[in-house]
Amino acid sequence: MKNRVVKKESIERQFSLLRTFLAIIISLAIAFVLIYAVSDKPFKDFMTLMIGPLKSVNNLTTIITKAIPLLFTGTAICLVNRCGQINIAAEGSFFSGALANIQELGLVDEDEYQGAKKVLRAAAMTYVAATAVAIIPGIPPILHFILCFIAAMIVGSIFMGIPSILHVKYNAVTIVSSLMINYVALFLGLYIILNPLRDGSAGFEASYSFQSTAILPKLFAGTRIHLGLIFGLIVVFIGYILLNKTAFGVQIRTIGTNEKFAKYSGMPISKTIVVTSIISGMMAGLGGACEVLGNYPRFVYTGFTNHGWDGVMLAVLCYNQPKYMPLAAMFLAYIRTSADALNFTSSIPPEIVNIIQGIIIIFIASEKFLSLWKHRVIVKNAENELLVRMSGGDTI
Image 1 (tube, rainbow, N blue to C red):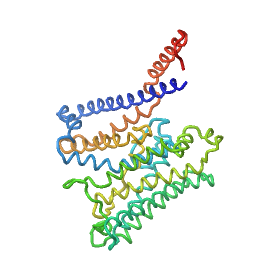
Image 2 (image 1 turned 180 degrees about the vertical axis):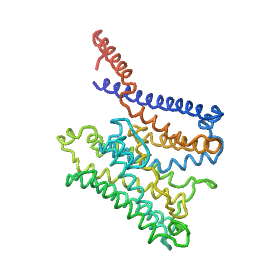
Image 3 (image 1 turned 60 degrees about the horizontal axis):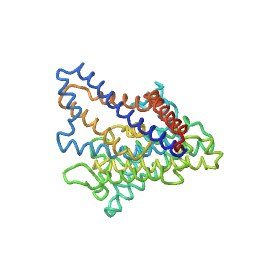
Image 4 (image 1 turned 120 degrees about the horizontal axis):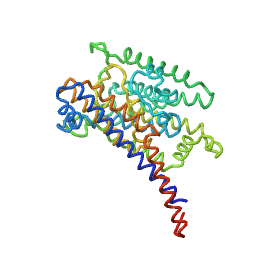
């Protein structure tokens, strides 16, 4: 029986990887067709999309820098997904854009919408928390950015944890609690940044300058790659260990797979959901602090990032497995850097990358894609096992 289970898991893993590979190939083929339709030099532009970032060291460092925040939010989303709080693979649709428009168009289900909002909300507020500590003078160098991290992680865990607490303790309607807390976080953060923390002499909407002791050091001189890369890889490692090597991880996976079974097995469902949300909020918070302290001398308000939605997309790419997160983050950062390079050298709109991302997610998240082929392989393996048993060989 154990061998049979291992074989089935191996087949599932092989088809997951095959589905990812084919999704990327199909999306690139469609991208070429689109480029061919609008470009006067389609082959050159397509090669720019494919290998443009490899032509300079600056582009390579840009890829790594763009991947850093994705390590945090992607791992955070993996945790809450595995606990069953966001079921992104159910329908296989993902779209990156304005939250209200996404939900109104019905492109994601309610759990996906609220889950992504929680991560976006946590990430936005952690920028504010890190900024508030980073402008304080007189704190020793290493201690300063550690305190920024702690502040951001606390705020991230609060804004990720509150909706979960309200849901499990008071059975609060998720859409109401999440929406209200979202507005509180949004406007409270804007008020803090644009009023008490705003530098009136800057001439634009920006905070006071960060103290030099709070800014994360660069890992390599002359590049933008900062210490946040190390912290991001540590977070990925922690996420992997937590999910796969601990008893708490077993609870997370069981609740996400079959909540009724977990309940009748005596697992603390409510506690696990809340703690998972808090841990995820801390990861997102640390990522927010690393992003703002590693790249900017002050907080400049220009709108909100899509790092929360990026995390959802990366979790889909990784099948909610943190161990694949570095590769997925680098891939997403690569194609976005390619889009920037393409935009500089041609009139091709960068939105083509959004098309590639959407197609990849559609195919990867669709459980029906390659399901017939997978079924045939499983049946063939079962028939082979049956023949072995009938011939008197070793069975199970």
